[in-house]
Amino acid sequence: MMKVAGVTFVLMLASVSWAQQQVRFGSEVDVERAVNVPKVFVSLLTPEDRWRLRECQKDATPYSSRQKNLLDHFVGSVVDVRNVKIMVVQGRTMCFQGAHNTQFWVLAKSRKASAGAYKKLFEIRGDGFQVDAKAGETYPDLYTFSHTAIEGFESTFGYSRGIYRQKSCYVFPLGEDPPTRRIRCSKYNSEFRH
Image (cartoon, rainbow, N blue to C red):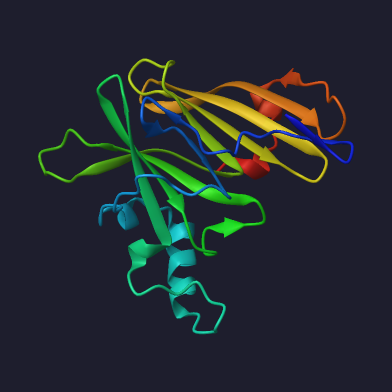
């Protein structure tokens, strides 16, 4: 945490590597060791996100997010945790970004027969996203951070029975020495969950 003009900021968004790979991602953090997002990714998007992608491609104004290639709206990074590789995909154009937030997806290679097949494990919109390289069984635990103008929200997700589920949720007011308090995840601000 850092205090600036009496306001405390969580500096989770700094890009840090663990074991020579990036595990922290954020709306204002460059993706290190970027990899191409697989073509199948577009088919894994929700109908709402596919609609958003189509609308961004229609926009021909000078400030548009239009890209020559649909996949240029995204950037990927492979994270290898205990010999399990996942791909973190981050929106990198205004089509999937907002004021201090971006959309994140986590993909894993599918065990289906076709090479290059991926499955979507998780998606969320927020300020920051971290892969916990030391926790989790099948897939690593995921830590997310988001905030409004007055509160910060932290949540940890663990993979269980085929999906990621919230394990713990915290809320804290932004300001001097904010007391962080654990809350029931059902009370977690749904604005940041997708």
